[in-house]
Structure formats: C-alpha cells, structure tokens
Amino acid sequence: MVDTEHGSASIYEHIHKFDVLELKPPFSPERYIEAIKMAEDAGYDTLVIDSITNEWTGSGGCLESNDEIAQSRFKGNTWSAWNITTKRHRAFIDVMLQSPLHIICTMRSKTETAQQENIQGKKSVVKLGMKSEARDGTEYEFSVVLDIIHEGHYATVSKDRTGLFVDKDPKPITVKTGETLKYWLDTGVEVKTGDEVETHEFPDWKAILEACTSLDELSTLWREMEPNERLNYVEVKDKMKEKLNLQTGN
Image (cartoon, rainbow, N blue to C red; front, top):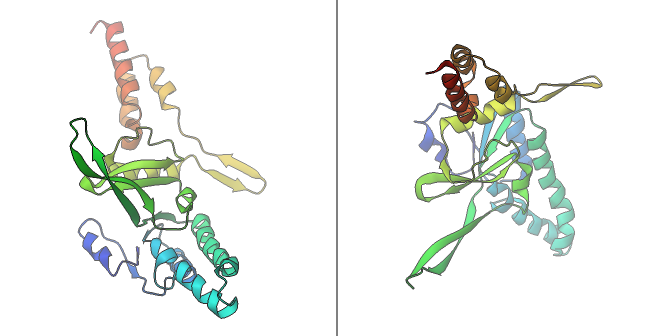
C-alpha cells in the first residue's frame, strides 16, 4: 500500500498483512510514478494507493505546482502553465494504466447536503451525490468504480466494465467481491504472441449446466466450479435441478 494519509494504513493491519510505503509531501505526479515503479520492481502483484487525491489537490500536487509554474515561468498565467502540468498528470495516469500490477485507488469525495421535504411536509437534511476530489474524468480511467456510502460502508457501482456488478443496489464490499474481480482479471485476457493474439475466454457455464442429463452430473459440475463462478449461476443451477427432479419423478 502507498499511504498518503499520514500513516492511516496501520488502522487496517488487523484485516490482512500488507507492506506499506508512506508517501509524504510533495505529492507530485513524479513521486507517485516512482512509488508504482518501486512496487513493480519489488515483485508485488497488487498495489493499493490511498489516496490519489493528493496527487491533484495535496501539498505539491498538480493544483499547487501549477500555480508555482505559472508564477515562475508564465508571469502568473495559469492557463499556460497547464500545458506542463497536464502532461505530468497524464504521465502518472499512463503509468497506472500500463502497469502489470493490479492497482486499487481511493479518492476523497465531496458530499453536498440539501433540505428535503417528505410527504408529511417534514424537512430533513440529506446527503446528495458525491464528487471525487481529483481531476475531472479521473474515475473513467478505471475498470470498476465503487462509491462508498458512509452510513454502513455500503458501496454503489457508478462504473463497471466487467459486467460483474449487474445489481446496482448498495452492498457491502466483502472478500467475495475481491475474489470475483480477481477471477475476471486472471481469465478472459488477451495474450499477444508476436502478431497473434491468443484469447482465453470464460467457460459458458450456463450452456454447460443446461446440458446436464442427470442430477449427479449437475452436482459434479457444480462442485468443480469456483465459488465466485457459482455466484452468477445459482438460478440456472436451481432451474436445472428442478427440471431434472421432474424428469426422475422426485
């Protein structure tokens, strides 16, 4: 974990063992890039960056350094300075996207509040949609974006390229969430060999289960499936079990 939040990673040591690099100011894009490269060179396979907000709004981050560049090189013209700052920020994003690591990032968020009136006419203060504290559009760089609801630590899915999170209702993040994502990452990838591309696709478990001709065959296949795979095919399995039970007169 790259910890930019003043050693807060230690709060989570009881959950799982992990190594920590405490990144202190200045939070420049170049220092984030250096941290990612260090994790790659050390042989890690997963990196958590908590958080990438400081790269944008923190001490020495893009907003602050852009003002400094404007004053020192462009006579205070911040628009001209962005020609330099944007390239530095883009380099950080590109290093993340091109890294062989699985990278999980957190971002701070702004929460707006407003008064809301219910049908009885009673007013209450509610929290509205959250906006990430990062450069606009940063969330679109990720395959999955989960917005954490403070009350109960539930997560809602605001972006999902994987197709794993069809149900948009708020749910807590669990070990199964990570297992499901890891399975998606480890399979269905394209491996380039020269000019050829070898594609490893997911098994068509729906078709496989529906082709079962006996309860024993269905049971055997179900045991062979990974636990995270079963999550998506419980309904298919139950329908086939009911169908095969009817065929055997049970």
